[in-house]
Length: 50
Length: 242
Image (tube, rainbow over all chains, first blue to last red):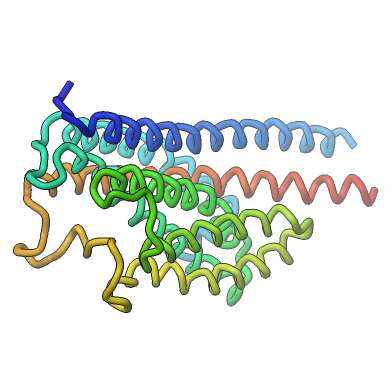
């Protein structure tokens, strides 16, 4: 761990906020994609059966 | 391969399936390398101390927040002129990613500004235009969700995107228009005298590459999701009419 001196809180919080937001947007995109795939598969299945 | 092949949803999905895994992998590699390099292996700045390490997040996110809006502007114009659905959906897919980059730039800027400027926020031309850009992102996303008909939503959001472009341009060039405010000039410059020292420059370039690749991966991935949702919407309409 590098010595961040008196600005340790600022530097660490900037990294924590940014990495959390980046992970959140990626995770949200994955969740939305999985939901859309599942819903479309079901709808296409219903359309085929009809 | 012609650019217009992207306009065919099926062709776009095929291209996205091939590009997305590589773009995500390369983005992760660049971000981990760049941030580790910047955080652990670069010295403190003689004036800013260790807060200089915030540059590896602030500069790439601010750059991509503006570039994401520029990409949305181009795809919105393609929608307005050529009526290609994929281009409208690509703009819709890019908005939450661009907004995330904007929030990161605003948050890291405030965190850096507190110890360096003595304030979290100042109504400086660049900061203010960046905050307005964030509000445009919010409005753009809200407008897409508020209108049920996808073509009407695409038309109205495309117009909003054209208007918001003024603030995307202002947030980049505000310093040139108004020679006042706290925000310093460009971090990166082609002039070697003005550019930052190489010891900070190279890890910053790797981080910028990481942010660009992450944006590309997310936009392709999210556009494919939007194409699926649009198809789902069409099937639901057909079911309702049957």
